Image (cartoon, rainbow, N blue to C red; front, side):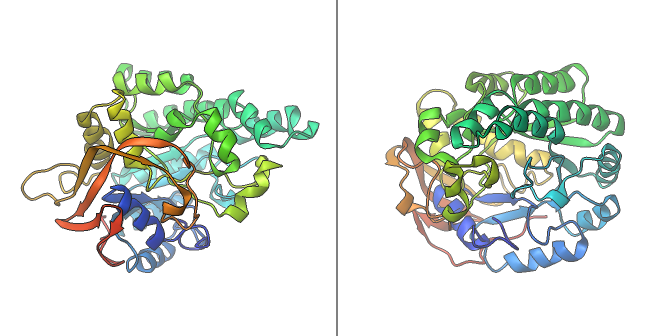
Length: 394
């Protein structure tokens, strides 16, 4: 939710409000803030800053940069350690360059420290120098920087794709010999080789590795990208590979990463998409997109409960408080109308961006009530509670 440091894009109040009206009961927030929560002082500052603003329950990642601070972050309630094993080819936000852990020795020490505290290491993998060299060679140095050039470079695997798989290969090995619980981010953004590596590690080697599938990549098609341009990220390499990853157990959970930017930030991307921040809106759109997939027969409601609630709660150590309906658990519910049809419209979005990456897309199935700890926080698209109702979940 971009807080602290980038609140002109989004803040905890607006981001959690969008989540609440969309049907989301809890979020995990990332670390690419300024200052970033890589030390105890900055983590505690962020906790105090966002507490009066949240509409839904939330957890916070601790930033993985200094192995020596991981213990303190864990004791302060970090739900996991988020590591950016990447750096943007032009060093553009949201990839804060100083957060990039490209030294594999430091990466391994972060894994050791995370393992010792019993937390999950959640990693955005990459080989940024490989990506940078080939993207500059075939596109930027030839004067091609427009939105379609960017997406062509992505489709070729230059922007992130093959570099992400290469970074994953090293990380899987280091994590296996270290014994850390590894969580792989952005499945679906990577070519199918990533799916094969993760499946092998999980089912042939018995490694403690999980991964989350980016819902957005499976539904973002070229026509939508051409319409909204830099207000979204790329379409999937192979959408069917995503559905296969759910079916064969490679994907443990399905997410829609809410990565908002202001219109002023992204609109220059029509001319030079390599130089603007890339992201997608998703907090308000996540549940309708999932329900649309259920109505299309791609998922069942039981699949959604497992992939979007139970599995994340188990992996991040907050089950059975979250992720299940049983006595003693938090009474978190999303009540659905599976026949409700809707259309994403910019003017309906509560995100500070003022737009939806999915603008104009029609869906069937939506939340009517969002209930957190037994209290209705949103009903029929309207907030029912004040900021600060949401609680920190360590």
